[in-house]
Image (cartoon, rainbow, N blue to C red; front, side):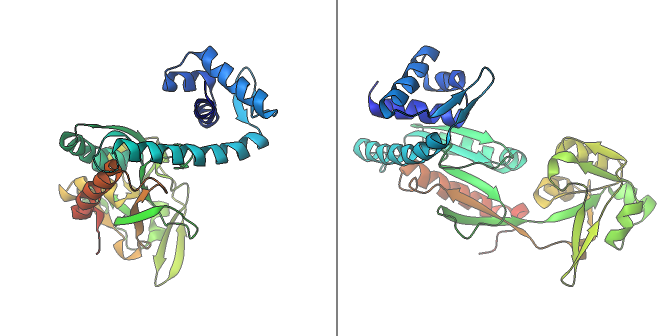
Length: 303
């Protein structure tokens, strides 16, 4: 292998923390991957990876080298894209990520439409809720819910906002009454979706003052879909993000309560990874996705 191929192999192993997984993704045999990393370490005279029978970890020298390698590979990718004309015509692989439920509801349908319009593009979509390092994991476009850090180097495209909301089924509210203050939640049956990241504390705002509530759930459930289904069936109240209940709310299966105590809205943005924005596939996909998300009333975009 030449040096660029050795770099690609090392970067893949380091990011995936696995020789076998990297081999499958690179369509190489495991011995080829092992030899490439060994040759690179021999030429550099330093250990880049720590290997055990169970895991692979990057050494401190390997971490520093990985940062440089990623920049070199990104520049090489740009040069190849310019030479092949993919800055002018959408083609090639587009790597996209989004939170799981948001990706299912709002991003996947747009990917399908995009692929229909641009037959020379292939999309790899990773719907995951964990934090993603866009540069290290080779992401082109990400949708993120949350505030953008001040030191962000990526291109940010605002597309909407969501709110933390409390809701219950209309029949349950008719029978038990609507709570008037967040503290009432501590004595009412609640459903906690453990995948919602709200934890054991729900917080609200009243005239700028923070109110924290610790509900005692009668039902803890691992899936957000299931928590919403339970509430629709009359299990009590739950807290989710507004986009997660949008369809149920529109169809009258749940109703929001305590709306005047809702915390400030959380922004939704498309992130375009630094150095990737000139590719035609990235530009056209971001244009389509931003237009569709901004037009969706469930996401509350404000120009």
